[in-house]
Amino acid sequence: MATESHDGAEKGAELVFHPMDQFIVKPLFGDGAVGMFTVTNVTLWMALTIVCIIALLVLGTSGRSVVPSRIQSIAELCYGFIRKMVEDVASKEALPYFPYIMTLFIFIVFSNFLGLLPGAFTTTSHIAVTAVLAMMVFLTVTILGFVKNGMGFLSLFWISAAPLPLRPILALIEIISYFVRPVSHSIRLAGNMMAGHAVIKVFAAFAPMVLISTGIGLVVTPLSILAITAIYALEVLVAFIQAYVFTILTCVYLKDALHPHH
Amino acid sequence: MATETHDTANQAASACVDSYGGAIGMPQLCGEWFGNQIFWLLVALVVIFFILSRVALPRIASILAERQGSITNDLAAAEDLKAKAVEAEEAYNKALADARAEAQNIVAQAKAEIQGDLNDAIAKADAEIAAKSAESEKAIAEIRASALDNVKTVAKDTAKEIVAAMGGKADAKTVTAAINARMKG
Image 1 (tube, each protein chain N blue to C red):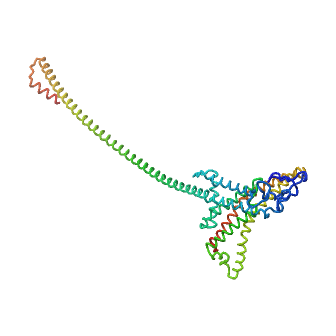
Image 2: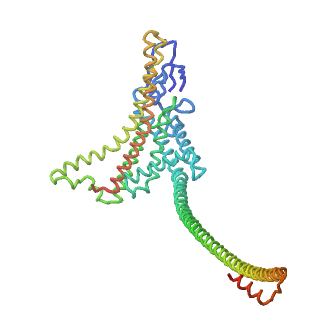
Image 3: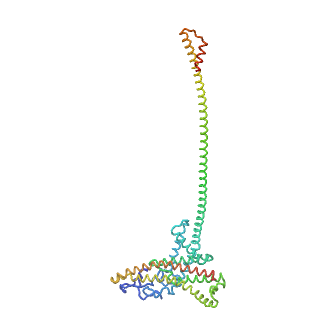
């Protein structure tokens, strides 16, 4: 997130707003176009995510100690947290899908937190990434629903608790909401991650005000630095909460697939 | 990302990046990059999934199971030890009570023995005292008898002498009778 200075001589000492530049995908080596298999900053930050996951869940638990070290207890905490979530929200029959849900959670949570490092690229702020994650969940849940329940899965949309005349209308609403799920699921995560980062960047652009005008700058610069700090704190919270929300919604959808009857 | 220098101002890197390296619109909506992101995402997810399902999750599960097992074992062991402690306390109390009872027995026995010894000693002493006093009485009676005889003899002799001195002839029988009569009186 370092300030991107364009030709200073041409632009002079003005405030430079480029809040969206941090989301640009660019090749890691060279300056060419971004093809499908180009090694880009996306590759770098996803690789770092994997490295962190290995450090926490594999190296951290390599002691296998009964009395855990600090890192091992964090790894156990993650494990217990997601496992309990799957068990509580999606029932015991969902436990075979626990590694899949754990993969989603651990990937999102590490991507979100790595994205908070200054200068980092936030992979989960891209709709392309979150949409794939959400579509994977959607397809898994839909296919699993039909495989496990056959046509009985459609009873998810036919609410037997409602009065008969209302049921077709409710079914329509349910079907629409079912297909909107992956959209909201993905945009919620990407939007949250993008918004906070962009706002921090906007405040960061205001921070050098004191260099331009000492008068206003004495007020604006401390305020914007304070705002960056505050929003950063909020973003730390959001980084975890969005990973949590994505995971718990996955569990809720999985429960629908396993037990479609209301 | 620190500083980006562009030699020619008009050279746009792509449809989503302007000639200064800045974003055009939202980079999130740049279709050019979708393929790249999706490809690397799928690679990352597959890698993470295999790391988790092959290594990390089974390992953590076994650690947790092991801990649960050792906690259960420790609790059972603690229960055992507690039972043993209770048992030991009971044995201790029993030993204490036994010891006390035995001590009381010993005290009673000793008391009885002492009492017996004392009684024996008293009886022996009494008998000795009785024997001694009987002997003494006998001795006193003898002494008295001998004293009486002596007095008689002295009185006879004295009376004979007195009678002889006064010129008479002392008849032994008369004197003795007179003295015996006097002595009785």
